[in-house]
Length: 459
Image 1 (cartoon, rainbow, N blue to C red):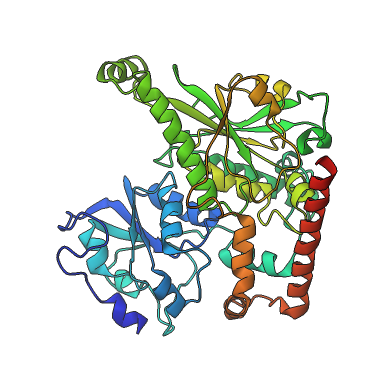
Image 2 (image 1 turned 60 degrees about the vertical axis):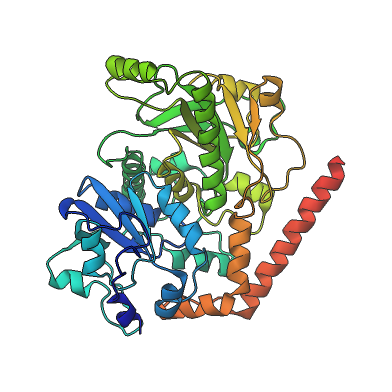
């Protein structure tokens, strides 16, 4: 049945995304497709490699119904998955309702010649290759699958409550001083991870420098938020990207960004939108101002330079417990790096951005510090007293995806555990079992109790 649906071609005027007229086919207009179920960095890695092969990247996204029929239930809705793809810096356009079995009429309609996919095999419900038609037409290109991450891996961490993915010190891992294996194996892993960070810190072409990447080194107390003295720490740049441009406002945001999802993406999009509105008020988009930037700097650019600080694994686990974060700091960092709404990333950022930290940011004291609705980690104190005292604090209100965070995603998995475990079994992964699930539920209850005690202690 999935194969029959895949051969259907929309009637004129019924294509899910404009243009409705056929687009001339170009070899440098690339097509990728998939489920793109909660946006881990493996999806972004596939899009990065595909984007480097052409000048435009169209991303087909399968419907919830077709994925259920061919693979199993999705964690995220189609709307949420489209938002995630649209936020990727390397995606030119998303095409929802793309057929599960890649169709030549679909890719040709949107002007794509080549289809790109990883070196793993993807089959439909009948066990046939989803790319058999484009392969037969000689319009299929293979890229390497991103190692060490998949939706299945992440679901397994949730169901089994493992912590083996945690990283104690990202700096030491990148330098080959922390991790499993021999010294040589650790060195190789560190080099590969460093290279991955550099690749993800690229611009929309995937070929030129994009976001800057830094690490903040400080004591555990300063990173967790227990440092009353306001430790300055030190910043180390690990990727030299595109710096702040003349006239741009430096904007700071921070968070765990675990299971980077629509809640995070919509927050970041609204931060950029708010700053664009501020820019509009001060004439940033006037034609004369635009031409002046192009004449003086060779290109135009936006009014805001958004710096995202991301917390360590131990910081998130201190505040949230259980086995959060589900993604380690390296994985979460790659997810944030691929997002088109940020310009720089700071690994190991403190839970509390103190005055000393803000004054010593590599890009100087920010013009504004934004924070969004907090529901994943209920705060027992105000971490933003310093930005407020400096009169640079801004807030983003609730929105349609405020509730979509790591906790919400874990609950979705738990509610449909049997279906996801079947998906695990099909992929040859270990099932969680009733005892493991009961343990997760108990750990979640204990974490909720700890949060309640912390609130009562400061009430």
